Amino acid sequence: MPPFRSHPISCDRGWEWHLSSFGMMGHPLFSRCLLALCWLISAGGVTLFAAEREVSGVYQGHAPAADAAKRVFTLNLAPDGGATLTTLYIGKNDVNQQGHWTQNGTQVVLTFEPMGNNKPPRPITFRHHGHELSPIHWDPSEWGRSGPPILHRSRTVQGGV
Image (cartoon, rainbow, N blue to C red; front, side, top):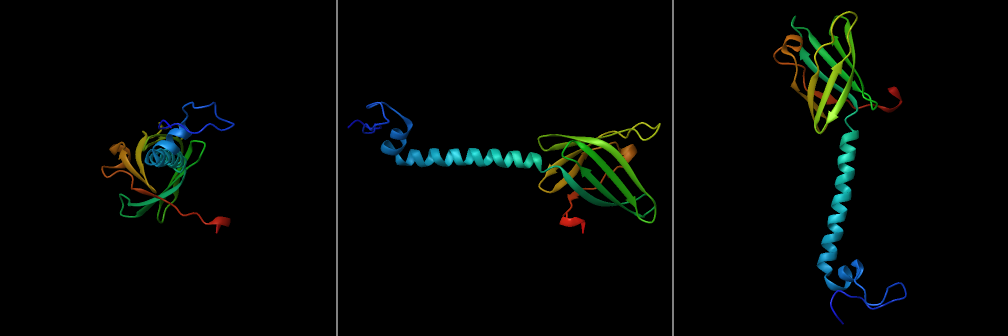
């Protein structure tokens, strides 16, 4: 019998070449490698898709304020691209800024809407890695030289508790 050909069965067309005969009859190692490659490609696609989707959520970080009070940043990235950045100044009022976010690979760009008659702050670009958003580009005149803090994904408790 020639290599890589299977015996004819009712669903075969005689001694024609087909993938199952090559993989199963000819080279078992090849069929295992092909199976492993298919599994890795499909698992990698799911992982990449999941990574893209998991950017949305709530992130928090802390930083000192100019007057030495602590600031708590909470960034809510909605799945629809909407965003809310809340800055809580300990012992003072909080500030809510509305905006939108987009993702390009590992970069997440946060753009803001105008507040009243004021111009919106310039966008902030973060690098998304694991459960963190690390600022990589911001306007120092608005956010200071050290910029916004690294934001960590918040753990949400079901039931709002």
